[in-house]
Length: 266
Image (tube, rainbow, N blue to C red; front, side):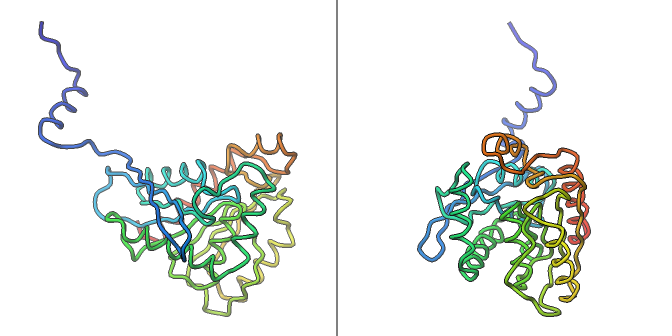
């Protein structure tokens, strides 16, 4: 008996016979070391896109390098970028408890030079991937990660742009005019109890004084962690003032995609 293949199955069979592998989303776990400490990152790219493309660093929330950060890297890969969800704490330092997350965050932010070294090492991991145009790099971060990418911009790192989602806007770094070369986008919640209106105002003043190219979008009534679908469970379990907002998350993501198209001229 001879069975007939569907058109899709026939195409797959022909590709296999010809020695071709179907283009698809690719991911890879990357282990690297910074100043004697081990870190674990996550690369994502899509073979449907040919040639070199811009790279985007993804900096996790204060929970550490978790599934949410990796999911964001995969979304960027599907949009045509090569993304690297980096690790700012060290391999295995990930939690779902606020007290431990606070401890991890304070340890990481206690030394800005060490923080920059970790970010720089991750950027080099991204740049050396064969799909990446290493002249075109951006970074986006969430919560703790949002503060990190803004601080890297303040330090004048060679980035085309940075995007902060519900990240802290305060910083001990005081850039002078011309120090910030990266373009900046900030998305924040109007009801975010961790990022006050006063903090937004101070950030705006500081960026204007530094001559930065930046924008701030505030979503009325939206709480902290609005990008993360897991925020509602955290709010319920620990009584934290956080919450997912699907509309704000979509608007922020769509705005980010337009931003990358502009800065990378795609």
